Image 1 (cartoon, rainbow, N blue to C red):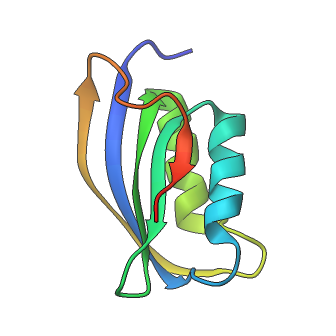
Image 2: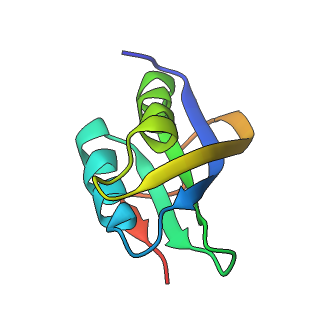
Length: 97
């Protein structure tokens, strides 16, 4: 297991609203062991932040890039502000409204 903690912001483009994307993302994050948040944006995308061990963050990044919810269609995912952190800023992965 990786001991390096990472944080990364993301924005997912495609058919990602109204298809239970956030619910599935919360479930995946819980199973992967990462924390952070997700929310719908006014531009029709889904945005958020993931934090955790580097390998677990990479697992979540792969999910956000190519899996999503069963009814979603991911056109592309942008990642930004990826950095090492000394401690987690969150205790859970939550949906923000």
